[in-house]
Length: 289
Image 1 (cartoon, rainbow, N blue to C red):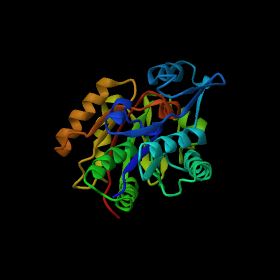
Image 2 (cartoon, rainbow, N blue to C red):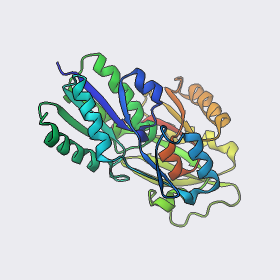
Image 3 (cartoon, rainbow, N blue to C red):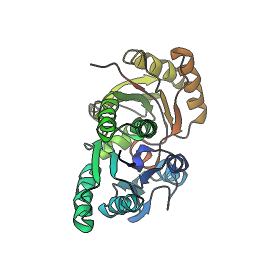
Image 4 (cartoon, one colour):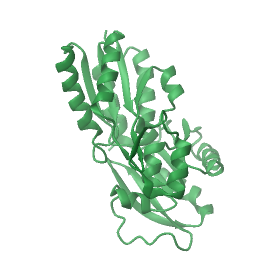
């Protein structure tokens, strides 16, 4: 039986202490402020990123990890006796992380000759804790003795169905990075109108708009109900600098679906740069096609 190592890039937003507890290697993303590079959650915190995003968003951007970062992780796994590695990464349509890992795998094999270590790469097609929740589930499956092939199949199915509806303060951040489709013609930032986005099916889509914060949570529940798998247990509450709204959504989700959200978390460095910090969202597993 393989000894399996899980690796994910930091856009999965898994808490570093939790990752350490479950032996999941998190590869930091690069946060660039005024041209200077910082490793996420190591050299710059989410709180520091939030402040810049809120006050001077044009100063900051992000970049995917370097091959060296992944190669070092592979070497450490080899030294620790792992015989297989599964790397789960952010949506390849939004970042070059998957290509970076593919190159890292080739360079690792060339440098070490350790072609006996199997390295599988899963393109989650998703973002933040939507695929972070998948990685955490995979850790439990490893403990149950699942094989590499079973884990990869699980991840591909899970990531194809995990999705979220979210309400943002503005679409400006996503428009700037070109990571939202269907946004043309949206007139935001006026009359308390907020954009709704759908994250799923390997895309981020403008889905509509809503007026007034008091209508946000009922609308998120309504949209989730239209798509959610009746057996879904993986509800995920996402937010930014709006803890009260996150708490309200958590309670409303539990009342509506009779399931307590599995994860309640602020989005991390990379996502906040692309969405802003004024967001609240509900993730869930949608019905199978």
